[in-house]
Image (cartoon, rainbow, N blue to C red; front, side, top):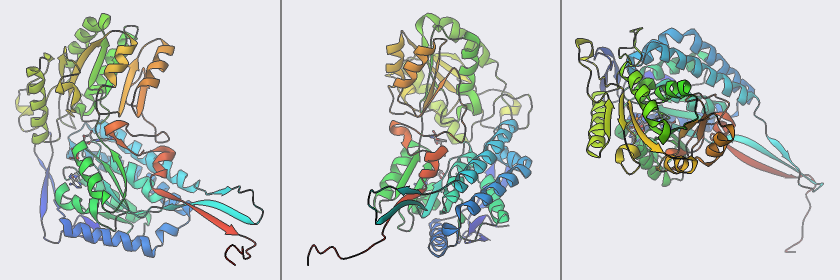
Length: 488
Ligand code: NAD
């Protein structure tokens, strides 16, 4: 069955190109999917434009749109096993992590389904008797939704659910490495009764299938999650037609551990912060800042535990961490570590591919700790997006804040301390979109997600997530019109 979904029809690419998808854990063939080129994407944009301009989706009552999203939330749970398996095969991530993701994805649809139903305008008090004035919310239009490979369906849900809740139509372009769950989602939207042309799917490489989404005049909004360089390129492309742009980009996230932190909790969470999903997490706590007096004991214990992390494929139940997504990505992580060592970082564990027949065909890289780093090193400033932790020392609160804020990014980070007042003071001064106190990584769909500084702008999830996808229109009605006579 063809894999591009355009105007309610499944079809192949116009030039009939395809792409092999292989599992990063062992190189096995997962599937062969259609590979769109720019012409397919232009057709998808035209379909989304028609569906927006001619309806009925944008003017469907918000409560009915909400009902459809709630049906999708149920269908996602019905298909949880198949979806989780597909996600693990495409990404190489552990099955149990993919299963968590599907629950989160269903919750995301449920949250925006309810938010859509609650979506109301507001009456504006003008102080003038002969006027009624109100603000109503309308969809933005045709949305280009471009997503990465690390949490393929989760990142997609964070865009698709609020875009549909607000009444938009869209063209989705997932990462070319991980297309299968996006295909499955389109089938669920169809099954839930979404009208043709509202949801369109193009698969393929960014520069070909993705590029028209950045500058096409019929696209009103670009919502992108991915790397900083791609984000900059899309922002520039969108400027020509002044599209609304929302960017969720990278991070180099500080995890600050004060000497008075609960030791067991802080060590345990520092490992989760950086090694979850082999570090391929935008909010990964890849920069450990540890107070000088605690440094040696803390890093020794962290290294001891990091060295024991078991690598393995998605269906190996004893594995604690999986492979990287591709050979190219592993090469990037290796180059990053090599650069860190030339800059003077001290390798405490990892740093070389694991040996053994079970690792030969996959893209494995072990948990790696680089100690004695400083913020002038590129290894501390640049995102590796792999299982690599840099460790810096600090002394006191002011230095912790200064170092934590000393990157171009501002996505997320954490502070570990038993001093509640200090935790709050530090959290208030961190230039980050999310700050965890004595925790790392949790999020809820009813809160917001997004970055300060060059981690992007615009918010996903929560009320601001919905606001990204709608326009506020002010309607002023003169209830007693009569000539004013200014130019009589
Ligand atoms: P990427 O920028 O290479 O690709 C992301 C998406 O953009 C893919 O679908 C890709 O095909 C597409 N793309 C690439 N070039 C394009 C172009 N010229 N026009 C249109 N589309 C184009 O990123 P990636 O390697 O897939 O993902 C890793 C990055 O994503 C990391 O930097 C990570 O921090 C970031 N990320 C951020 C968040 C967040 O919430 N802030 C979440 C997940 C990932």
